[in-house]
Amino acid sequence: MKYNKISTINTQKLLVLVSIGLFLIKIFAWYITSSVAILTDALESTVNVVAGLIGLYSIILSSKPKDKEHPYGHGKVEFISSAFEGILISVAGIIIIYEAINNLMHPHEIKSLDYGLILIAISGAINFIVGYICVKKGGKENSPILVAGGNHLKSDTYSTIGLLVGLALILITNLKWIDSAAAIIFAFIIIFTGYKIIRKAISGIMDEADQSIIEEVKSVLNKNRESQWIDVHNMRIINYAGFYHIDCHLTVPYYLNIIEGHDILDKLTNILTNHFNERVEFFIHIDACQSYQCSICSLSECQFRKETFKHQIEWTTENLISNNKHKI
Image 1 (cartoon, rainbow, N blue to C red):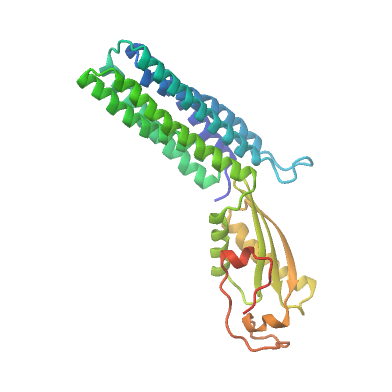
Image 2: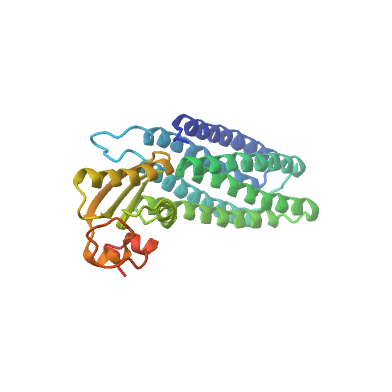
């Protein structure tokens, strides 16, 4: 299935609308209960709204075609947006801790917890459903913004469950300090969520090697391997928010002419292009085989063989990224 820009944008719009709706529900729940734990949950929802709007803009921008100023496209903006969302989440966690400590020092009356429990439970269920949809859609479309936003909503659900337990304990025991304690626990969970989002965004911005993508390419190449692909090495993969740029060297029989060599190259690129739903481009250099590689070359019709064939070398992550031609 090809990348569906409209579908991705619509999913992000859904996330924004849901975030606004949940924020209003939580603000109302805080208004009727005066619970600082519920207030902290509402504060985090403001982050969801802001991050959702920024993410929507980023997805629209990243889907623009390549131009003279951006020859590799605009996909990197999604990583920047994800990093900003992670920072906002972490800041919200710090504010929550401050408010919780202040509430411990200056406690106030909590009321209407029964209604607050119902509203928070509803918001948690909606969070999980929409978060699940966004993560699934983001994985399908290779969109870090959708995945980050979806995981954020799902993490809200887990903290909401803890919040409900804390509020229920307050209702049963009438111990007001539980409200602040629960808020502090959720704040640390939120900060950790923000850290993970920031860490992943920075790895994308810095072009950190994505082992899972290299493993995926390795599996595709091994599965579709042809005898004229003597080796593939010096592989580099850059992730532009789900659009992959692949550099590598392909070793082919030295006696082929340019047209024949490029026919072999085209087979390899077509296989990877189909696998990645056309969200990939290549810069592949063709190398001529060396006599010491005869022992790993399974090309039976070669008339220039210097050594007998022994066995193929299985392609691994290590030898694909190595800058050396393969040999026994």
